[in-house]
Length: 258
Image (cartoon, rainbow, N blue to C red; front, top):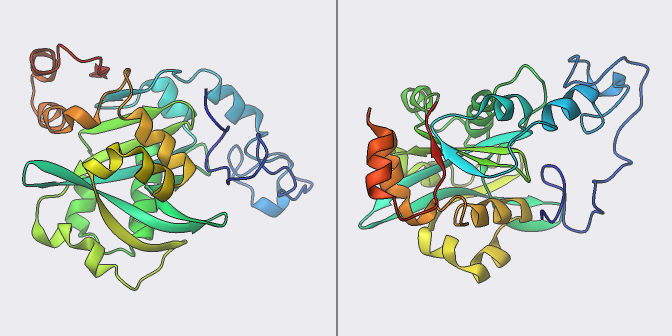
């Protein structure tokens, strides 16, 4: 059972979120369903009938796939990117160090869906570009529009796209962003897979939302961390299913191709 509902509820807020944060205007909807600005909203996104309907039919089990299922593409609440690079025989992950809700911790590069017209990739790439100060090359941003893998996390309704960088210039994005702060991001950090496996590290260094998503990446239903390289390489080939079954036949990784 999820420890909280919704996207990025701050530590210490009661379940269901803080209910006093929305201005009640005389509008006929919210930014999500009608595009009206916040001051003219008649209800919040959380209370939006359209958004509630979309969320009611999402997948209830985490999975890794080449694309989101249709119901999840319609009902996602937030999206982001987990950038990876290979280092020797392992991998490292690019995360953002943020000060949020009184907590200094690591989070994914991404953000909340604001309008119903936004796709998960739109949200993920736009937020990534903003939070990295536009320091990633445009050619790479175009490639990120077709990421090989996405992880679906039902508790947070989060679509986490995985993308690998190999060029040394792209791998040094943390250094290029040093000293820059965008939308609460203090700095970028490369984190090892060993740290992601560590319960103590996750508990001490991650924001609660990101901690739960990483835990799902190594759950029985979605054993991604242990087999990331195999899954990533297989997803780039035209015979994905056959490779996956041969390489991962003894795991419970859920992998679908659409």
